[in-house]
Length: 452
Image (cartoon, rainbow, N blue to C red; front, side, top):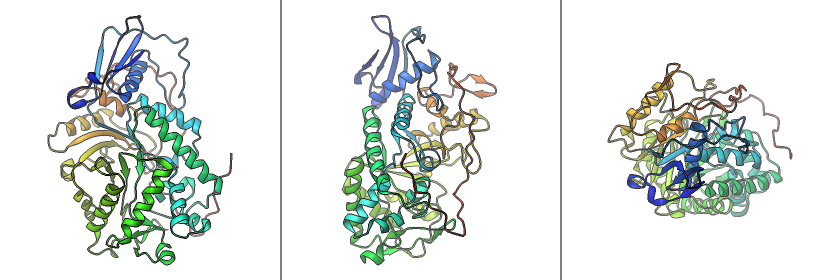
């Protein structure tokens, strides 16, 4: 049984769930929000019924399962307002061809782990194709030459490359639009607010030639040509951004969170001279115009160059900084100058295919950071380059553990008490990984999707 009771929220409205026994003698989850309820269900299944839904066993038949009653009421209050999930790369390495059936299971898995702000870029290709063809005179073929194929949309979405792996067939854009709407509707049914791809000022490298609107060259990235960035001092910046957000709303609807990462991974800034700060402020203002007052710019801190700290010019309360590799690089989060920050675990990249090393160190690192009074830590997240690898979902259990690290040690590492017995072990399938897709000296053969 479940009960939604907002009055059970913790201090400052912190989401809270209680596991108890109902008057009819059944296990009962009471939560202050939908997300609190689903998190409580996941905690009960894992820590009381010893049923752990994992990526190669995302469903289970509970009709014959033993669902024990708790010894007494058990209450957990969230210590993180933001529980972030995913990485642009996950959408290419793991999710590029997920069907709606697979996405439903993934979203339910998110809800059971308390995730409340996952990245959602499915349908970004449809947004761009609509805008370029309807507002700027691009032919479908010209738009398709800018949009990457499914397995490369992560780096296209982060403004590192254009066109690689395409062109995509017409039916693909229809599929992605339909899938995006289903994903977002399901997430919101479960109290999850998606992080949508906002406008980072990026335009095709052909944009100025076809429209006359000024843009600036960003150089290359790992042998690929980068898209251009609109001149942030141009009066057309606001117009292009407004058109982008109009098409984004048509495909995905509005959101509280928008992801933008200008100058990602070493963009050439020589063409911008003294316009770097202008670029960040123009990006922020265009988001604010599209979604005023309550919207947040969600930005990845990933190997920032000094000029990228201009992002912090955005007003406090309107930006969330994802410290993308908190478990690997111990940074002083005070460097974000009071902006809301999310401590993130990035377990697999650069040929590392899983979470390795001392789990206790990772857990202690989060609690030590959270103990700082000045870093404005507001969340916890997992940002894997590829999913279906153990055991980083453990990161989300930290959210429910109170103010100190758990004392229990298993095989030399602290773990979430009490330990659950998984219904099945996680998949041993190996996912080769590298930091970037390797370019070739000759054009790659078309890898456009084929209709299933």
